Image 1: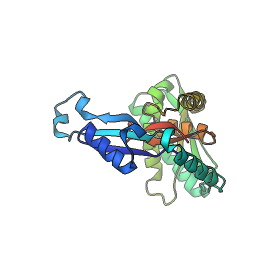
Image 2: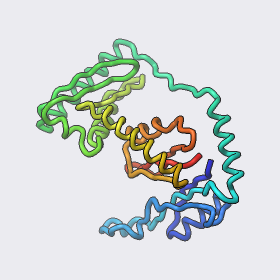
Image 3: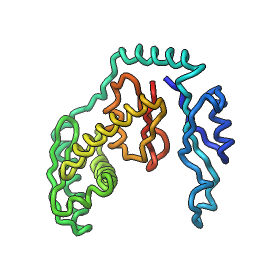
Image 4: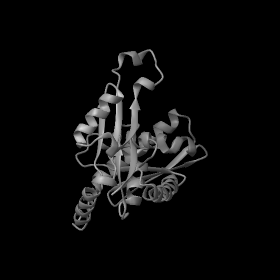
Length: 246
């Protein structure tokens, strides 16, 4: 597997030098992607108070003199993939906790819809350790927002409310107009398509910033791919998924 490092510096050269030193490689041995460059960003009044920062994603090329190293890394990955993966254990909640959490979720959403003047309804059900909340109505699209960002933010708020003063972990998943399934299927198709291009061109591909839900869909779609791997880089809300050769 190609070595990858995320490097930060006050200038491009400083970030590049730091990354190459970490990898023990030269510039000819890597591909470089600029993740963040404040020196090129549009300036605002407050930005002058921020330190200048350049962030690079530096990836080792998988061909040439480092080919034998890549094969060794691939063999290690294949060996590790045969080992059993521990699944996350979801603890079932007792009836009292489920009832209390359901009341909190419903009351919060009712108040939210009222304040936002949205004519919406919701259905909350607990199943297999999760509270699934389906929101319906003529204005349901407003809850989803651009690529689900509004829904993700609302889900975070609902989860915080449900978990307040609760000893057990409350897991909440919001959905509307079957958005999550549609978006997941769309992203999985896109992931497979981009993975084929990465294999053909032998060059990493980086998606635009995505929510945690969207990133998970990409990772899941390619987790068993024989030739590529995926990982996330950057900081929220600009975190991205990278597809790279194994």
